[in-house]
Length: 107
Image 1 (tube, rainbow, N blue to C red):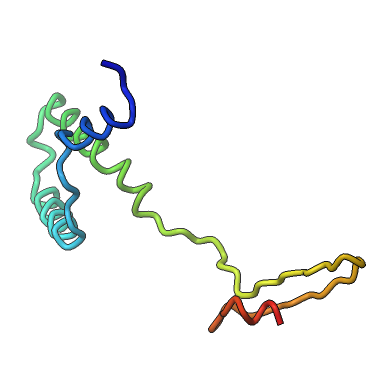
Image 2 (image 1 turned 90 degrees about the horizontal axis):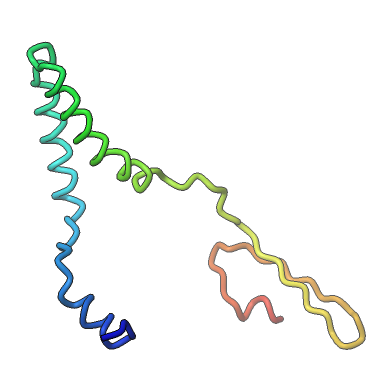
């Protein structure tokens, strides 16, 4: 049986992946984990336990950090559309994106 849109759809429906946690629960878990890690006495751990802790922490923290980073790109505040008619005449329309409506660009 090959993979096509029908079989792929069926496979996706029986996927074993769980649902993602909601943001409030995720934040509560993060707070709990932070509290537990602050209470942990690292000096009592042997090297094997320290490596295991590091392994678990990296697996769960590194991918999430890339998701949690905020986008810092500058958001455009203005839009400009240049309309060129069949005679080569240009009409430039500039509008602010505050209260923007597409119909304002045409006229």
